[in-house]
Amino acid sequence: MQAYVGWWILAAVLVGIELTSGTFYLLVYGVAATVAGMAAWLGAGMVVQLLTAGVIAALGTLALRHWKRSTGHPESTVQDMDIGQAVQVETWQNGRGQVKYRGALWDAEAESAGVDSTHPMIIRAVKGNTLVLGNLGER
Image (tube, rainbow, N blue to C red; front, side):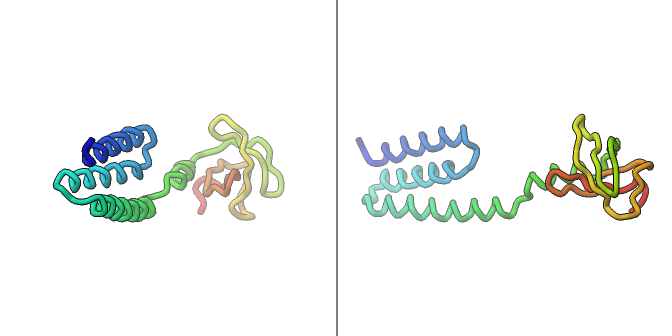
């Protein structure tokens, strides 16, 4: 078997596995194997093929890590969707209590000492599993 065929089979396997993982790293390695296969097809020696695959894989990995760091973090946007939503107070005492939100009971704390649990309350922030609440219309 020719070296380029081996590289292209490796590339196809890597890209096929990538389709099930969704991380993009195996896609980068599949591209590196494809280019190394092209180098082999053009008659380059094994050292050049390995260097080509290694350099492309390393540069692609660095570029992918940079891209992933520069994109937004989905976990923070999920919490941001909760901010501003109304809650129903179940129990409340001394600025802490439990509220009903999205069909479940949540621990909650007041945003400030001036929060009145007898008035409508909304989520101002999320700290771990605790909702930080304030009164509707106040800031």
